[in-house]
Length: 467
Image: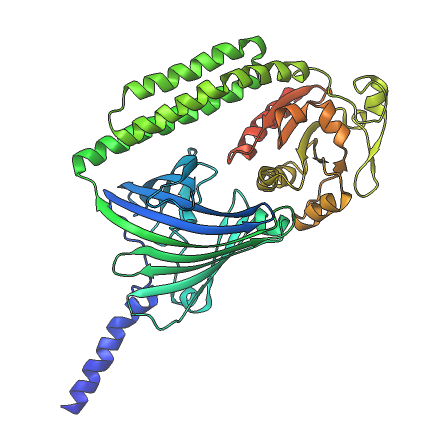
C-alpha cells in the first residue's frame, strides 16, 4: 500500500510539472469585453511654485478581444486640480484625454495610431512577469517609441495569497533629463485579475524641482450590456477615426499657405459628420470637445500656415553669423558644434538635412529625441545628416542632454538659428527637413508617436527623387 502511494504521488508530481513550468499560477489580467474599470489617482505635489493637489480620474472600457487574447481597451483620463476647503468638489478640470490600445494578459501593450501622448497605459496595466523565473528574479518592460523602461520586482510583504505585490522603477526621458525618480508599488488581485491599488512617489531635480506622493485605487468595476457595448465600440471607433483624420488635415497645413482656411473647414466637416453619427454620451462629449478645440485653434492654425509659407520651399537660412542669414555668404560661413567641429549649410549640399530644434527644459523635445536618434541610426549609411539645434542659454544644459541621451550626431548650440528658422513662432520641438538643394522641404512641429514614420516618408521621397 505504501509503495502504491509513493508511486501515485510521484505520478502526480510528473503531471503537475508541465503546469508548474508554464507558470499557470502567474498573475494575469482578466479583461473581459464589457468591463468598465474606474481608477482614481490622488497626488499631493510640492514644488518651488507652491503646494497643490491633483487627481487623475480614469475610466477604462474593455470593448473587445482578438484571437491572441489581447483586450482592446478605450481609456478616458480627466486631470483635475483640487480645490481645498470644499467638500465633494471634483476640482477644476485641466485636461481630458482619450486613448485606445490592446493589452495582453501579461500586460504587454500594443498601441494603435490613435494613442494619446498623455495617457500612460502602464499606470493601471503594468507589465507582469512572463514566467516563474522572472517572478522570482524580476522583469523589465520597454516602450520603443520613447525608449522608456521599467524594472519590476516582486515584494513579499505577507499579504493574503490572492494579492501579488510588486514594485517598479521607471526610467524615461523625464528621469534622465530632469534628474528624477518614479517609484510604484502595485497591488494586483489574482482573483479579480486587476491592479487594485498602487502607491506612487515621484521626485525631480533640474528644471522641475518638485516631488509628489500619491495613491492609485480601483474605485469600481461595472459591466456594460452587450447591445450597448457594440454601439459604444463602434461610436468610439468613429471618434478615433475622426480625430486621426483631423490630425492628418493639420499636417497638410504646413504646405497649405493661403489654402489653410479650406483645410480647417475640411477638419470641421470631418468632426461634424462624425458627431452626427453618435448617440451615446461619452463619444458625443469627446467629439464635442474636439469641435470646441478646433474652433479655439482655427485662427492660430491659419496664422501658422502663413508663417510656414515664409520658409517652406525657400532656401534654408544660413548658419553663419553674418548680416543677411539667407545669402550665400551665410550658407558658406561655418559654425562649430559642441565638440568644436565646424559645419556650414553649403557643406551639406547634396544631402538631406534633419534639423531638430530643442532645449533641455522642453519635455516634449526630450520625449521626441529617441525617435530622432532612430532616424540618425536608420539613415547612417545614406546621404542624410541629422543635427541637434540646441537653444539652451547655458552650454552645460546642452552637454547634459547629449550625454544623458547618448546623442552621436552633431549638436549646434545657437539661439539665433531658432530665430532665423521661425521656431519661436512655431514652438518646440520643431524638426525642419532641408532637401539636397538647400531648400526647406518639410516641417514637423510638436511631439508625435509617429514622428519617425512621418519624417522617414519625407526623407525617402527626397532620396528617391535623386536616384
